[in-house]
Image 1 (cartoon, rainbow, N blue to C red):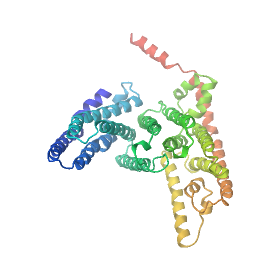
Image 2 (image 1 turned 120 degrees about the horizontal axis):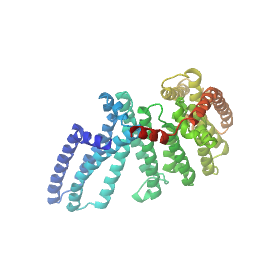
Image 3 (image 1 turned 90 degrees about the vertical axis):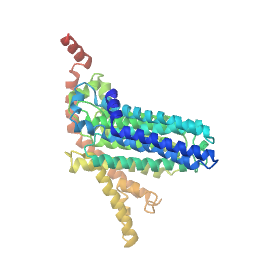
Image 4 (image 1 turned 180 degrees about the vertical axis):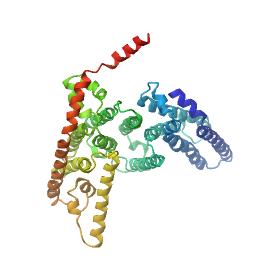
Length: 470
C-alpha cells in the first residue's frame, strides 16, 4: 500500500505543482536574500516570507490532499479490490498516511539547502531553524493523519467542513498554549514551556493520530473488523497517563486539556455506536474465558458496553480531578461538576434510545441534541437580558445546560445544592434507563459469546488454507 500510494502520489499534479512552486519560490527568496545581504539591508521580511512559503505546503496543501485518500479509491471502484489482497482497513489507512508523510519529507529535504544558505547570509541560528522545520514536519504529519482519518466520509462538503473546523480549532488551541503557557502566566520566552509540556503534547498528539486512523479505518472496514475496542484502549491509555503523570497544577496542564479533547469523542462514539451481532468479533474475548468476557463488558463494540466504559472513564477523571482540586474548590462544586459531565454524556444517549433507537446516524443526532441545548441556553440569556424572563435556573438542571451556565450568576453558592439535586436526578434516570434498555442486546451478546467460543482460531483457519493450497 505504501509503494502504491507513493508512486501515485508523486505522479499526481498536486505534488508536482507544489514541488515546482516551492522550488521557484525558494529560488526567488534566495536571490532577494542575497541581494539584500550584499547591500547590508534588513532581512527580517525575507525570513517571514521564507517560513510562509515553507509552512503553506506543510500545514495546508499536503494535509488537505489527504481528504481524498479514500474518496479516490471509491470513485475508481478499487477499494473492494484492495480488500481482496487481505489488507485490513487499518493497514490501508496507515499506508496512505505514510505515503503522504513521505511526500512531505521529500518537500522538506528539497528546502534544506535554502535553509543552510540563509545560515551563511548571517543572523540565522541554524539549529533553531532546523528545530522549527522538524516541528513543522511533525505538525504536518499530525494534520495529514487527521485528514486521512476523515477521508472515508462520503460527503465532500462534510470532509471540508470537518477539516476547516479542525484547522480553526488547532489555531485557537495553539494560540491558547503559547499565549497563556499552561504554566502560570503568559509566555515570555522559550523557557516558559518545559520539556514536560512538549512531551505531553507529543504524547497526546500521537494518541490523537492513532485515534483518527482508527476512526477512518472503522468507516471502510467490514462489520467483522473490530475497531471500537482499539479506540477504547487508546482511551484507557489516556486515562492512565492522566492518573500517573498528572501534576498538582493538573487543570493548567496541556495533558489534562488534551486528554479531555480525546476522551470526549471516544466516549460519545462508544455511547452512539450500535452493537454488531457478529460472532467473530467476540472470539478474541471468549477464548480467554471469564476474564475475557469481563473485559468485553467494557470493550465490546456497541453502546451497551460503551455505557460501562464511559462510567469507568468518568470515575478515573473524577478521582484524579478531585485529588488535585479538593484544596482549592468547594466539595459540592466538584461533585456537581462530575455529575453534570456524566449527565451531559448519558442524557442525550438516553434520549436517542427513547425516540430514535433505530437511527442510522446516532452520532449526528447526539451532536444535534447537544447543539439544541446550547441554543436553549443562548435563548435564555437573550430573554433574561431583554424581557426580564429568566428561566436559566430551570435549564441549569439539565446537565449540558448547567455546564454551559457554569460561572454565571445562575449557579451561585446558594443555588448549587438545588442544581446538584436536579442534575443528579436527571443523570441517574438517564443511566438507569440505559441499563434497562441494554437487557435485550446483552442477551444476544451472551448467545454470540457461546457461538464465538466454538469458532476455530485464525491460526487454525490459515493452516487449513495453506494445507489446501499445497
